[in-house]
Image 1 (cartoon, rainbow, N blue to C red):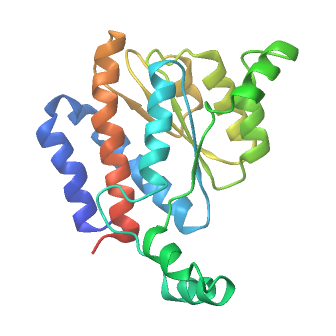
Image 2: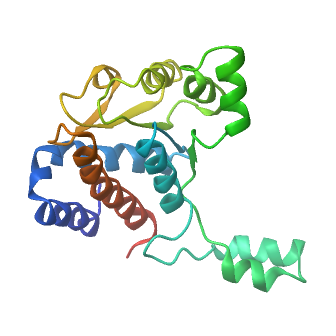
Image 3: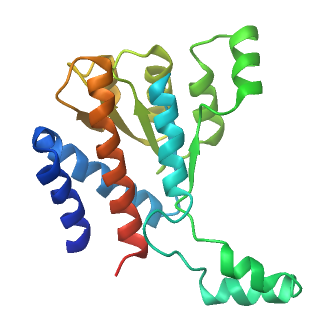
Length: 216
């Protein structure tokens, strides 16, 4: 059951960006399936190209550390740190934060260049989903057109692995939505207009997930 305060975060997104009202169901569903994945020990894998690659890294940055809320370590972990590393325990426990586990598939330069050169340039994300993904995880595939072949292949492999696929796209949604459990198709057709709407969507997504696990 989603917290009322989390619903408020998502409803506030629509108030501030009325054009996104058509995406409301998808945004709520994306938060719900991701929260369930996290509650069951899963993680989010994110990928995209160009500006969407930067967006995937941005999302991971917000999930893996505190966004707007404190994420203090649980007392049991603090005690374990104190027992294991008493000399640095205070520094570690005061500064480390709980994370919502997430991996951006775009940052592995050595892997992506080697795989693209040696095997296939459009299967690099799929290869990482094969390696990192497990049943119950989330793939967040970002493509402004919805037709990015490498993101679509990643979504196909995510389905093979028993993962849920969230597609963040625009225009008509493209071929990616055929592989999405949760499509979010923002109402724009020009690439940079789509990207301008993607940012508030994924900010709200990250805020909502943080609130689900660390909010009051």
